[in-house]
Structure formats: C-alpha cells, structure tokens
Amino acid sequence: MAKNRVILIAFFVLVPFLLFSQEKTGYQQGGSSFSLKLSPRFEIPIGGDKDIFNYGGGVDLSAVLQPAGQSLVYFSSDLSYSFIPTQKADLSVSRFSLGAGAGLNFGLIGNLSLLANTKAGYYYGFLNDGSGTSQGNPFVSVGLGLAYQLTKRTSLGIEASYNSYLDFHNN
Image (tube, rainbow, N blue to C red; front, side):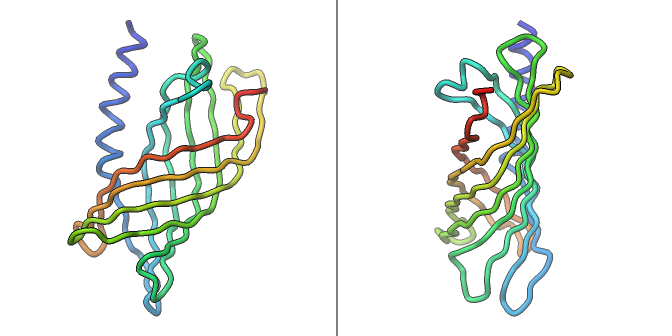
C-alpha cells in the first residue's frame, strides 16, 4: 500500500513539471539560436523491463542549437540522471547518460510546434546497494513532443520518447 502511495505522489509531482518545462533562449548570433533546457522526466518501463523495474524519474539538461536560416532543424546535446526503483524491495538503480542528437521543429498553429527528435550516446548505471555493481553501454532514443511558445524566451512543452539503454538489465 505504501509503495502505491509513493508512486501516486511521484506521478502527481512529476507530471506538472513535465507539462510545464521551460526553455530559455540565452544567445543568438547571426540568426542562430542557442537554448538551455532543464526538464524533469518520468520513466515507465515497458516490455521485459516492466518485470524488473518500477516507475522512475530523473532530470535532463539539454543545450539546443538551431542554425541560422534553419527554422526546421535543430541539434542538441544532453546530460541526464535517472533514479529507477526495481521490483526487489530496497533496491534501485541510478543512471547517468550523455548524448547528442538532432530534431525537427514543425510550426503548427501560431505559437504551437510539433517536435520530433532522435539521439544517441553513452550511459553509466549502477545499483544503489553498495555492491559496486555497475555498467555502461550505448543508448538510442526517439521522441515526439508539443511545445507552446509563451514569450520569445519561454515555452511550455510535453514530450514522449522511447529510450533503449542497450544491455541495461542483463548484468
């Protein structure tokens, strides 16, 4: 019962942050734009992972560059941290990842945009049980999202992505 309560509280704490992530454009030169984006994440295991992991959460810090003359294409580099409880009591995993990718920003109606992205990189994960068990491998990700530009410097958005952390649960 306490486990369900923790999951429910985490869901209602993390979802508003996911819905209201902010992006601030900090630097523009020659028409290019550079943004820093800090976004919370809520992780839902699927497939075989749902038998091993519970719902998790984390945070992403992204640097986004949209080249001059390109309103459609953008490039990003990301640093992420995730905390993932397992199905075993009192056992969890921490995972750090560093990646880079590219995406498309489709302007829809007014200030509303559809975002599609892909990225790849490397992750390092370890058990939080003091055993020293850890591993690192490549990862790949694809995502789709919506963003609404509130002002020239602030937008709100939500994104769903599929992440494959290669060989994550096999060791």
